[in-house]
Image 1 (spheres, rainbow, N blue to C red):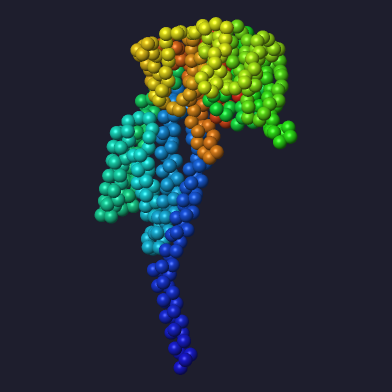
Image 2: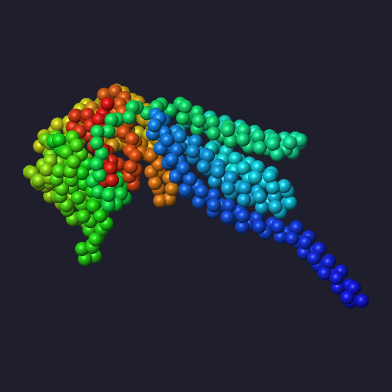
Length: 449
């Protein structure tokens, strides 16, 4: 009798377990899928900038501004990262509900597009904010309407797919319009030569900031002088020290003519300042030394008891030494390029002032920019444009636009192919006809159109 009842109990227990698995067990895969989808989406978001960099390289043959292209690529990679996360959630929820597999992917994309619309609405970027808001709102309306219609349509999967595709198109419209409306870059400057100074240097020290970028290369009577960190730090007792190398290149050919090495505290990069008499001033953070083009020392010398040299006016006649409090002017005569005019670079615009009156103003092309130097004759100046992604960050692109001071007109574009860590060195020849830019891996001279 017991042998006849026992199989029945086993069958009942199996049935209960099956019911529990259907009702609860399948949902246990949702939390891990949520976490894994989030992790893989984050990984994709952090490494997809490599694809952006490849796309930007393609634009080098065109006259497109990389900054406007990034607006489209940023939204696309954000939606794709969300799709990875959303699909993982939608697939496991569909698995728990025992739905068909095909709609699960559509729901994952739908979730990604809804979050992408919120991202577009809140994103601060060039272009019309109203247009972005309209596109985001329209995209959500199309998506919600399409999903509702898919429940009533005979071909629900096709209707859902079309709603997703149309929403994605609408969300991309602001970026496409921005690309179409952004002015083309000026003609590319003619490169005269390129040379390698040292392949074994640490780019993070040699191209670490916008401040350093205009102080590590300078023109001096037919020569180009460059200074850089020539290797990893060593120790003098407990003090880390670096070996800094000073090179003098023939400005016509780029050939290295003279070399000089110095040892100093780690992280105290020497600076170079071009003077109006064809020399350079070397600031090693302790003393100021005038150097001839062949790197031999000239007069005068100046020992700094405090402060640092902040900048040199375009004319190259005096240095401004920042002290605390106040500043100290070092020079033989007060000669200025123009003592009536001041140029102000601000977010999105350039303005020329004279006694409080705006003489000229012009927009700054799209993209993150910083000042990259003036010519000594006061007729040319350059802005550097770049963008970075990743953690740690890597430059996606870098280029310089050279402007005419009198008209604020862009003259030419200098494109950098060998990316620095942060910002390439840059300097003008005294007459503004030539522009040198690069880093120890690749230093190039360009002719300004």
